[in-house]
Length: 122
Length: 289
Ligand SMILES: C[S@@+](CC[C@H](N)C(=O)[O-])C[C@H]1O[C@@H](n2cnc3c(N)ncnc32)[C@H](O)[C@@H]1O
Image (cartoon, rainbow over all chains, first blue to last red):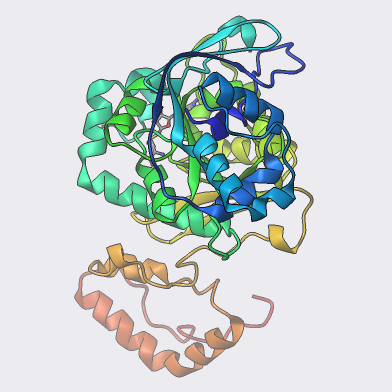
């Protein structure tokens, strides 16, 4: 799971009012290089919850993202490169996602979060 | 594989390790899924500006459909309930992010963030109650409700589906409309038993020009490559009802009684049961017909 996905995921357990952001527990992070597409980043930027991304990246060991960001920064190649790395190149390979309200853990194995709910959570 | 795997077992049981591998090593299946996905992507009608979008692939399986999204330059998140299918997707190093999840439990995604969704040969699975706690109506509602919320306004969702019968198609469509979607069903090659394919084309937001449902391929007899060698299918591909009025008139006139007599004679020689030639044969009908 990469951080653009983490930034979109929200716990949908029955009764949870605010399931975002899921807290990340890291056992293993892997980095994989992918092609740089500034257009994709510009399209994604307005949809991102910035603080959640900065925190998630930090948990994964990447601390280069600025605390605050606005769309004017999309002009800067340096900023885009950092955003690219944080969103698309860091993979949570093993670990867990934790519901911020209930503390329920969604395990992540081989990079795949298990979001299946138990029957009483639907 | 049975014609309707969803009647055999729940998806996470049916698509076990061996079925997942079998499914993904059949070149026929790979080819069909790629074609269905191409068409779904086309019906998604994303702006043609070359910008990679964030898409969802629901029931992504081993990633055959997602690969088409990658080839077209998009980023995607795939959801599937079968760990075995997802394992094959990992093996094949698909580019999308994968989630193990059940669409019938609703999508765990934030509102308004997804640029489009496709689902290839998966949504009909929701119509079955695989566990005593499963109520298809509620699962469809949870699915479409959550999908509607996570899509950006104006975004589309295109599902290629194999409904078991009309009632099932109605059920799926009604659930989508209840969730707020506009749209309808596009049928490609409706006159061909073999090539006929159904797509649910849904738009998020109130009905407008952009929510009009596009036409299916082969609706007016445009031939479909798979059928070209089968005379039978070619004939049923042509539907008089769907042809524009003007064209119909011209052809009628052009053919006339002699043509009909000749055709009937041919069919008789083939041994077909053909009604006798009478003074009513090929006669012009009154307008009220
Ligand atoms: C025929 S396969 C299609 C896979 C892929 N879309 C393709 O084109 O190759 C159907 C997939 O739908 C998945 N599926 C069925 N019910 C599901 C559900 N409730 N939630 C998520 N996935 C489901 C199955 O596990 C299976 O992988």
